[in-house]
Structure formats: C-alpha cells, structure tokens
Length: 306
Image (cartoon, rainbow, N blue to C red):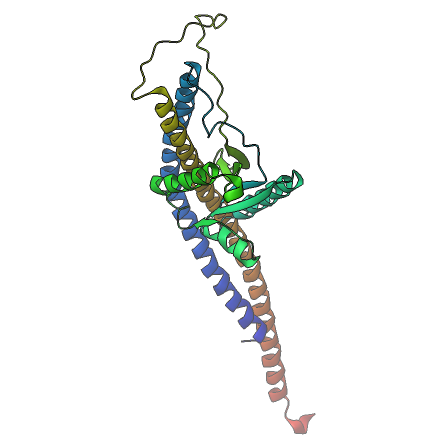
C-alpha cells in the first residue's frame, strides 16, 4: 500500500473518531436542554411576580429611599459579573459573552468608571487569568446545572459590595453580562444593570384601563420597610438565578448546534477523503496491472528472440 493511501486512511479513522465524539456531545446536550428549559420557564414568572410585588409595595407609600434603589453619588468603581460556561464545544457562546464584557468594560471606562470583575464559568475565568486581569470573586462548575444556593451566594456577594461605601472598596453599580435564551437556534448576549434596582410604581387600572382604581389594602408584617428590604434582596438573588438559568439553557443549545454542525462537516470530510482514497487505490491497481502485463510480455519474449 502506498504512503499516500496509508495517510488518507489514517485521517479517515481520525475524522470518524471525531464524528463519534461530536455525535455523543450533541446527544448529551439534546438530553439536557428540556430540563434546562423547564427550570428557566419556572423561574421567569417568579422574577416577574417579585418585580410586581415590589412595585405594589412602593405604590402603597413605602419610602423608596432604600439603599438598593438609590443611585450612589460615587460610581468610580462598578461591579461587572460575566456569566459564561465551564466547558467548550459550544461554538461562539463563551466568546460572545467575553466580547460583550469587553465592550461593557470599554463603555464604563469611557464614562470614567473603573470595572471590578466577578466571573462565573471556568472558560471566562481561564480567559481573564491568561490575560492577567484582576478579579474579585470567581465561581465555576455551575453552568451545566445551576443551583439556587450558588445564585444566592453570588447575589449576596454583589449586594454586600453595593452596600459597602465606594472609598472602602465597594461599588456604585452592578452590571451583569449573560446570554438570554430565545429559542433553540437563537440566543442574545446582553448586559443588564441589576443594582441600583429600577422599579416603577404600579397603577391598578379600572375595567377599561383608563381610570386607575384604588389600590387594594394590604397589611405588612413586621413592617413595610422590612418587607421591602427582604423583597429587594430576594429580587437580586432571583435575578441572578434567572440569568444563570438563561445562560445554562443557551450553552446547551449552542453546544447542540455546534456539535451538529461539526458532525456534518466531519461526515462531509469523510466522504471527500474516501473518494481520494478510492482514487489513490485505483491508481495503485492500475500501476500493478501495468507491471504485471509488462512482466508477462517480457516472459513471453525470451532474450534470444529479441
């Protein structure tokens, strides 16, 4: 067998092995997407209801001078949480989050603000470490199956940083970069300011929506201020939880799409290599036949008869 044919067949075996791996990754991602979507669909109404409850509470006359609602006079330091994935093989998912984080960083610095980075996802952490960028906190091994306890820890860490005065190492704003899940084929990388919180007062409309109706009476226990404080902190934790679930579902969908495309490319390459191998084998067979015919011709004419 010729050297060229051996090399082609070795490459066919290598690409076939790669195709099996990409197929396995595609099947794993496909199996995880339904669960991730169910958790996301369950978390989205929770976030909406918390916002609704906070807006109703403020509309009942609770003072909106809570620390989490007010802009800080000093925003020289701002926190940026970048949410990515822990694994690769997901196309441009992690790169899109990193690019969005870099764009947000550039915008904040143009405004005279210095970003302080909080990272979630091993790929994001590796990117920042490779470029020797300073970070405040890092969380890994969450993207495949985010846990609410981790979201609560991240949210509490960001709230504590926001509660701390800026000259003492705190931050005046908190921004989050995450990937929003739209559909199996569509994802949006977004940046959202989560602190200070922006919640508008809620008006309960009349039957036709033209005349606001009186707000229903509520009794707050232990007090409206304490309820608002607990609600706003839960709002932050719930927001981080939803963003982690959005990014997790987006990562699984991106991996499935990327592995499906890689598998198609591998099978296409296998077809091309097989044709090259067949062509090389045919050339070898033709050469062997010519040599056989030439040898037979030489034997049929002894040297004395020439």
